[in-house]
Structure formats: C-alpha cells, structure tokens
Length: 494
Image (cartoon, rainbow, N blue to C red; front, top):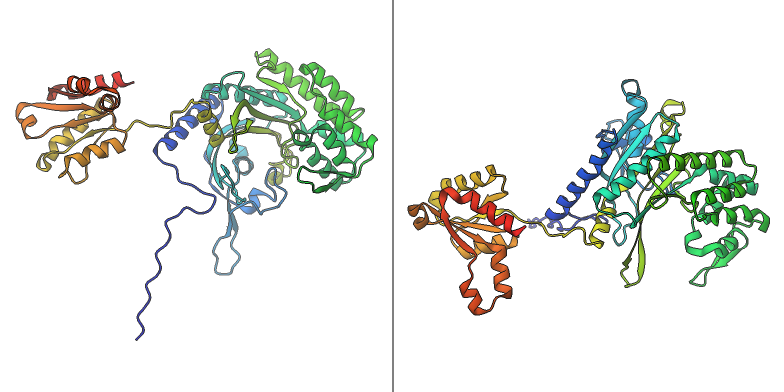
C-alpha cells in the first residue's frame, strides 16, 4: 500500500497587498482615530458603525476615481443550494454603506443626518510601494441638506482636524473646487459627447504633470511624453480648448480674483455660474468663521471622482517637502478628500437626497506625522515583575495587581523563570522601563528591588568605568512603597 503523502505545510506569509501591524503602529492609529473622531463629535456628528460587508448591488456599479465597474472590490457569491445566492463584497469605502444605511433607516433618522465613522476598507487593486489593499479611513458626512453651509462646515472641520492631530498651520492647505464649474467649462467648449467629455476631464487632471502647454497638446492632436511615446489627443480645435486653459490658469492671488477668472472661463453657462456662486458663498461662510486662504482656498486644479461628485469638492494637501525613495524632494500630497454627492442615495429611494462628506486617509496621515517627526514610533512597554521563586507566584501577582490599581501598565513574567538573565532580556525586548525583583531574601526582609532599565541603558552607553561603578539604577524599597517608587521612576523617565 502506497504511503500517504503528508499535506504540505502552509506558507507563513501575508497575502499580496496586505500587511500586519504591531503594537506601536496599532496604538498610534488608535490614538489618531480618537483624536479625529473627537473633532467630529465636537462638531455635532454622531457615530455610526455599519457592516464591513455589503451586497454588490448596494455598493453600486462603480468606485470613486475608478473606471472599471465592480473590478476593484473583493466579492463572492453567498452559498445557496439553488446557486442563486446574493453577491457580497467587502466595502471599498465608507460612503457607499452610508447611502444604504440612510435609505434603509431614513424614517428613523433626523434630517439632516450627521454621522462619522471609521474603519478598514478594501480595494482589489494592484498593490505598490506604500499602497495596500486594506487601509483605514475616517469619514464625516451630512445627508439631507442642499445648503453649501454643510460643505463649508466640512472644510472647516477638516482644517481643525489636521491641526488637532499635529499638522501645524502652514504645512497644509484645504483646496475647494466645484464639479458644476467643470460642467460649465464643457458647455463653454460645446463638447456634448460623453466620451469626449470624459477625455477632456482626464486631461484636466493631468495639468499638474504636463502644464498648460501639455494640456493644449493633449486637447488637440496629442503629445510626446517624457519616455518618447506619442499620446493621442482629444482632437479639439484651439478655440474649443481655450475655456479649459482659462479654467486651469484661473487661480488668482486671492479668492475674489480666482472667482472672477472662473466666470470668464465658463462664459454664459448657467450650471457653471451656479457652481461659482456656490464657491463664493462657501468662501464667505468660511471667512465669517475665521478660516482664511492660509488654511482653505478656492483652487480650480482640484479634480476628484468625476463620475461621483455633483457639486463642491475639496482636498486636504500637506505642503511640506519629503524625500522620495530616490532621494528627490517632493511635496507629501493629499491626505483627505471629499465633496457633494447628491445622487448616491437616489439609487435606493428614487428621490434626490443631497449629501456631502469627507474621508481622511488615516495611514497616509500617520505617515506624514512620522515624516515630520511627530511620532516616535517607539512605545514604552509594561513594567515587568520578575519571578525568582515559582512557589510564590501569588505574591508576584499581588505586586502586579497593586501596580495596575495605581494606573501603571504591568505584567508578571510568565515564561520559564529558571534563567533570570532571560527575564531581563525579555524586559529589554518589551521596551520595559522598569523591572521589579524579589526573591527569598527580599520577601524575608519585606522589601523589593526596583531596576530602572532606561537609566541603566544610559549609564551603560555613556558612563566611564568609574562613573558606572558610582552610579546605580537599582533601588531597594519597602514592599509597601512598591507602587509609589515605580511611579516616581516612570515620572523621572518622562
């Protein structure tokens, strides 16, 4: 009889495009989420936690900023014996689930409904450096009002949030545009074909990379890119392309000048003028609250989710420089974005329901704070109570309970206590600030030894042999003073 082959062991590796997060990273993210949601709550938004799984039908037939319907989600068919189970998918953002929640519960919710939410989202897209298929977002949305005061409030809240998490004024800018202005530009160009409109909008989105001359070429016959490849243009005449150029170069020295330039770009377009009027009202509302162009500014170069947003759009950009993987200087870039999406709930209700909101990319924002040196990326471990005598485990547990009751993070060493040196190595690996030591002699005398591990490391690194002999990082104190002495050492370390 042939010997049965053993099943191969599975490889211990994360799936492509995913990663694991350990102690300090998880703690940093949790702290940031607390800070962000604290600002949202301060503005009067209520928490919502919706399912991470939605039906594909609920999620819709598109992703924001993605042209391929349904190809960017992780989806599967629910098992049914007849094979007709629903198709389900992991949420790709936190806005599509909100549309479903509001449509389902609208009779029980206040209008407007103001909610914030946070959590992971999943995109089935090609991963790359710093680009993962699972990442965290933190959103706030107002559903049920067409007033642009809601858009102005979101922008003000976004500005406050960035400053609250540690991005100082001057290191960020919130930029605002309006999808209606883009529609007005298309009207002024007399471009009515949907495919041609989409091509024009994609060209607008390339302005930052190719500049005015490059946009003119791409709107016309085409251009050679940096690699020497020829890119076909949209095929417009020069006079048709002129409104786009006016639009892209309309950023003035202040909001008033920008608005005047935009009016020239949209010409007689009614929808374009409506969009400009909305931008003007938003700027007025923000100025009344003390948010000037040093924090929030009208900027026609903001182009977001062209098949998704219906009115004002906004984006938070960090303006300080970092070095890329090749050592070149570049701006950090966008960490948040959003806008008005008045058609999303309509898919469920058949009636237009105005809505606006913002999404902050938490992982991007954490990376920015690390670049600025605002995160240490080094967490302090717990105080470790070492074990010299297994038979006295109850005494050690009493010590650790006393430390915890005093508000000190602490643990008893639960590995093999035979080798005391290994216990101190464990404490070092845990980045522990203090070790507590007590054996038979200490128990007999009613004392404990407390070892300041941070001070010990400094002494070992910097002191001469004579200084090392004179200095001490270990203290003997009465057992009754355990918690107070540990607290004193921790205070001195901080």
